[in-house]
Image 1 (cartoon, rainbow, N blue to C red):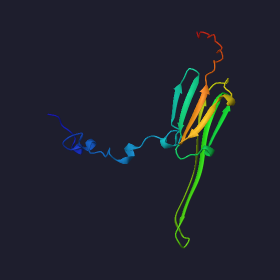
Image 2: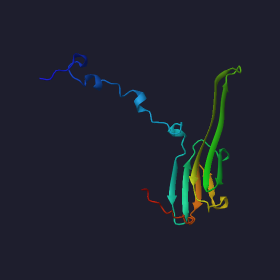
Image 3: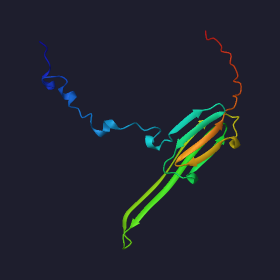
Image 4: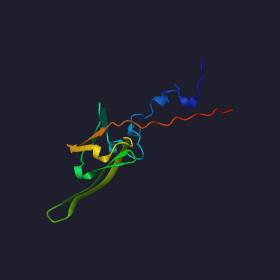
Length: 149
């Protein structure tokens, strides 16, 4: 016969099984870089024979909210938005007043040989479509490793 301390009751796992795992606290997804996941630019990338096609979801943004830049082989997509929703009743008193301001960006390495003129962008229905050509990568310098004694 096994003796169980009386602080656990009849079964050691009774208290564990009654733990509130269905609490919303345990259902949260971790934030990435201090941002919730719904603020990430969800991106689909397809490789073709001549380049890459990127589809970046930007729902709620307009073409004017999105900026593209290419520097040192890195293509950066930035989106910023400011929104005000003011609703007043017939007497001019506020019923609701909400403000939102936010921005996000994402960077892709496309290579130093790609120029801004070669990248084609189109924005429609909340999706930014980019076409980036493939370029032959520059030869990587080989390194001679030294043995450690």
